[in-house]
Structure formats: structure tokens, C-alpha cells
Image 1 (spheres, rainbow, N blue to C red):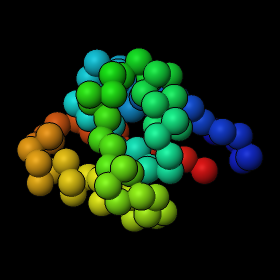
Image 2 (cartoon, helix red, strand yellow):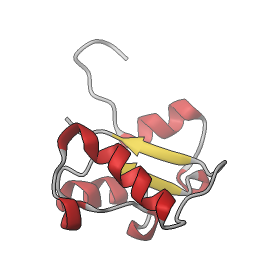
Image 3 (spheres, rainbow, N blue to C red):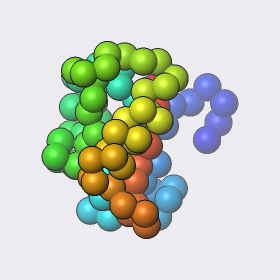
Length: 90
């Protein structure tokens, strides 16, 4: 992708050679809920397959993805070998 251009969530799936149905869980940056919901809609992945913890921990900046991933692992929402999509906004 050329410098300065922006990729979309769909670009990431295409580059990985997978479709939305192949992703068990999306663990996005916890910037704010409307952005997370928008990404879910654009990916055509229901919010039930999206990790959201912003309502409990707030926007933790660069720590939000690792914290959310740890949260879903601790609660059994993801297991070793599950295809997981991590997404950073910004």
C-alpha cells in the first residue's frame, strides 16, 4: 500500500486471504464504541464476535488491544488456533 494511503478492515482480510466468516473473533482498538460498531458493520461481522471492554476499562490507548485479547482469553471466548483479527484505529 502506498505511503499515506489508508487501508480498510476489508483490505486486511483480503491480504490475509480470509473472509469475514473465517474470523472467530475481532479484537479492535478500544477507541470508542461507535468506531468499533462501524468496523463490525463494514466487516459484516456481528458484534457478538467482537471483543469490547471499553465500557469497563475505558480507552487505554496502546494497551487496549492486548488488554482486550487477554480479557477474551481469560473468559474462554478465544482458544489457541482460533483465527483472530486485531485492529488498530488511527
